[in-house]
Image 1: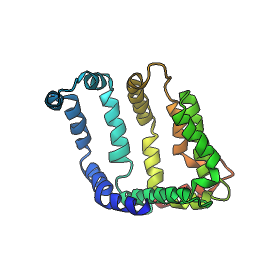
Image 2: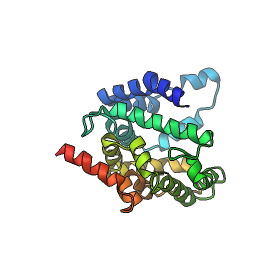
Image 3: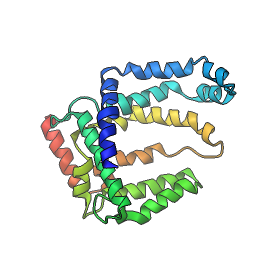
Image 4: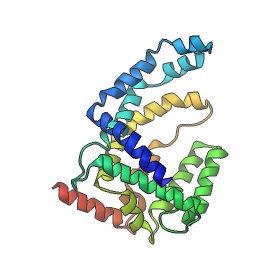
Length: 235
């Protein structure tokens, strides 16, 4: 997994993100193309395009564009407070995730592995497969993230593997009130297409994970120390 991630980073994701950083209007162009697509493929393949048209007409494209720009063209662009190239830092973060998956699949009971919180991970997977409510899904996700990020014995290693000045800046960008509002509007426009019966996920609650210092609380001080280091370098 880690080797595959490195290849995909070097050949796909990093070039893609650098392009997005240099030309964020590509997001506008791409979404406009979807909205104005003439449906030639549907005609050639003799496929009914009603579902496609319904999706396109229901989505709040303005909000979706704002969210896409926040995630793809703003959050990981530029240089971190410590001088690090944020696209490279993003790649390092994803490589850490790949290591996490490899260790989990190998059954390694170490800090960079899901084995140490297998029960929380199982509950999260069950919340997806046996979907009963959006609240149950959100709670299971946050419980899993807290176990992953906020364990007193592992928080230091996990933070050093995933967190950085670039990650701090990216999380702050994504969790800005204007971006949260845009995400809520975008999800609200998509939800009826997924299920008419399901309530909206609590986006504000989900966004708690974007502030690891507050999410983990005062007993876990590594994120505060790293935030203080970044802010000192910005001053």
